[in-house]
Length: 246
Image 1 (spheres, one colour):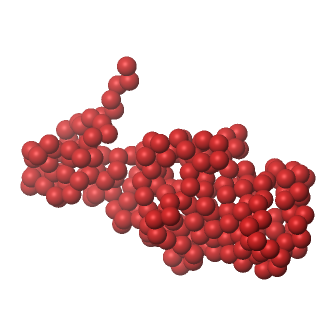
Image 2: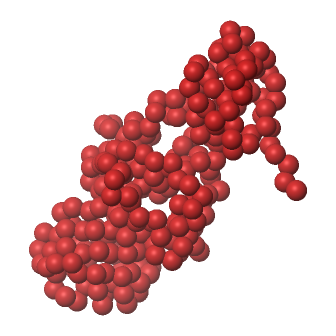
Image 3: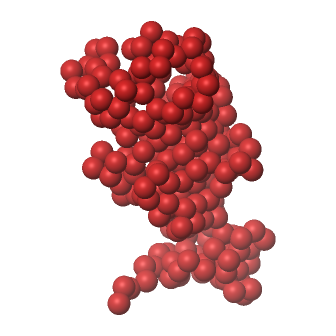
């Protein structure tokens, strides 16, 4: 039987970005932290980290934020960068401010470049992050690309061959699947995450990607009702879908 993990309440809330441990102790002393409706007077008490804690623990009248070990999907808009350091709008700016102070920090699962939109996963679970991006897992990513010029009709065969070599690299790409939607629109499913891979693949055919949107990761598709810039927490079923055949 797996033992339920516990944590000191002040450490848990401090690591979740609520405040410093000293400030959390004051919150508890003033009756502003409640468990099952009753005040928690001592912030140094240990508390069981059960999944229902998010509904049972209330801080300043608000339900607890997601416990450590969660994953989000973001509909990444154009013009924002998957970085902590670069100038301009960042994907982390789209998170609630308190979530940006969490330890362990929330990180993107791979990256989308500034001018690519669509499904981006974010998590504070390092083990899950590495499972998703590990080449051995073969988690596919599907993109919708609009191109500057009509395709020749030979792109699908070239991408599927597993012999395409990108400029500046010495290892061919793994086979990828292309479906032509129109003369200048295609769905491309890749099983790697090389730098600007989709753009460089079409560049190798003499074409240019004008817009690029990621529609799915593994078997998890971006919901039609998730607006650009919006986030949604994944369920266990969603996580399982990532690793399901796409």
